[in-house]
Image (cartoon, rainbow, N blue to C red; front, side, top):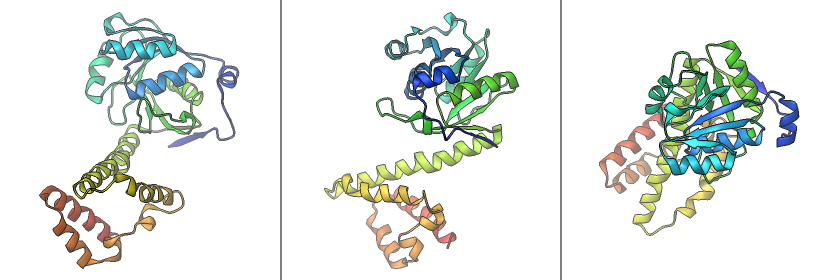
Length: 265
């Protein structure tokens, strides 16, 4: 894995314009959370978003207005550009890519592989209305065609300070790890919130704990940051907490994660 770091740069749109002299003309396919952040960041860096295509016309129009682009819902009417970015659900990527005939393309998925396509994968969780500093977002790129890969590299460097060249297996492993670190941990928050509601308690009470847990792994390895009953081998506490759970699925989750922590001792 090759890491390209631009830690010493503080980019603003004007600086981007002069540093990255080749501004690309880009088609954006998709108008959801990822497409929104990519589109506005690329536009802000000086690239030209030619067209936004999405099945949802309202979403396509809303994003197109922000990036001064045309919009549409029919991929058969795709315009010509330097390349296209496919930012749609994983299940739709292959069918969308199959319809792109006249230009290179890259997709934003961490797990999908498409022959002749590039990868433009941002390792971050996106919500449309939540601001993100894209300069801090790690981007993973690859392409079978080295010229196209270099183009992707320069485009990503115009919006992010953290760019990684990774191969297909590395990307899939990274995405799997991200699911555990982000999606599964968020599901634990959902479970915790439901448990609290049943006892008329507010989830806000847990937020300082969640923040401190996240902050600790900036300086400690996850295994060294681990605390709690399983880490302390408090078997009586573990037994009592399992008995508090009424849902068998939650009991299974608790037992499985507890067993994993105990293995690390």
